[in-house]
Length: 375
Ligand code: SOE
Image (tube, rainbow, N blue to C red; front, side):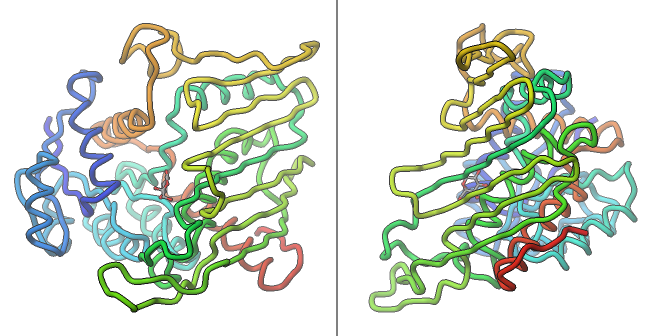
């Protein structure tokens, strides 16, 4: 069975997912066969260059011509383009893989999750939280599920970038509330929230977040428009956010995300402390997991590159490290296999919605200047 795939978006994420699809037959021979059939975008000349480079058979400038004409639809466009094409595809019975955050607003995420529910489990609706597919994160999840850290007491997630530290860095859709929804909060915080939900969200660990206190900050109010000397546009989203969390089962947590942390390029760290030990993960050292078990005096650094570590047997011998792009190969493997078998895939639109509820609560808390409860 060959799955014909239509992909909206051909820049950063288009490249990451097209690369993943191209790697599948080489490294995951049991993955379904995939034909990169049609690439969708508005700028015809950039689109046809991208289609050639990324291995697509054809192009289309209107997603409406594509969503019910392919076996799978990837929505990799900017956040404000997530809802309409994804909903149309699901209503046509076409499985959807949508980039994160699921939508710019909670209202839109709600509509998307409701449509996915109506489409049913045999029409997978995935939300592309790729960091769930880092082998060391899967390893950490196994440790947590086995109770090796004991009762979870404290969690910490920080996602630091610096591409907006310069006040003259150009304006982009990521700085606009209408198009992006929020700034560092949605772009980076959605990853952190999803990872914490994935790792400790089970009822027998920390459970759901019960209430939180959030804070947003914009340091630069307007930015220059690239290629338009003297023109500026307003920045209507946060440059940085932070939040304090209280979980259902008594654990507490703190979150931080920023695009203005000089010197930090893509620095995502997760730390979890339990009654019997701690663990920490850093995306900048994604092949490693640091673990401290009961009685240890310091952290042990485990190199998660052994054959029996998650996904590693598909790649290289132990110690031959993996990178950021491999997370996309792993998530594409899982998602496309779920499509071929007509079964559910996680993270799905419910997970996208759950992350969005947390982002929305952080915004509400910031506006009101008080703690807010999650429904
Ligand atoms: C830009 O901030 C960005 O590309 C995010 O949009 C991605 O989700 C993250 O993985 C890396 O940084």
